[in-house]
Amino acid sequence: MDIKVLGPGCAKCEQTEKLVKEAVQEAGVEAKVEKMTGTMDIAKYGVFGTPAVVVDGEVKVVGKVPSKEDIKSWIQG
Image 1 (tube, helix red, strand yellow):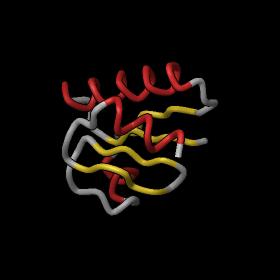
Image 2 (image 1 turned 135 degrees about the horizontal axis):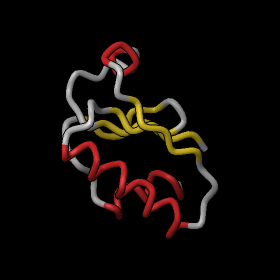
Image 3 (image 1 turned 120 degrees about the horizontal axis):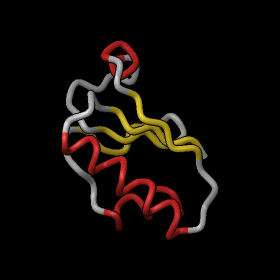
């Protein structure tokens, strides 16, 4: 599983990255979590608000910090 956290490094982006990593660990799934901060990298996903979370190429949330429960539902699918 490939998870990308998109954001320039603001507090909400950092919080989102932390929640994603915690959710992955708690769910016991194997996933590569990558933080993407470059404007062009973020724009490739058609995302214009941050933070955003992309799971296996699918944008799951844009412009808000997701709950840990939401993240777990995406990764346990």
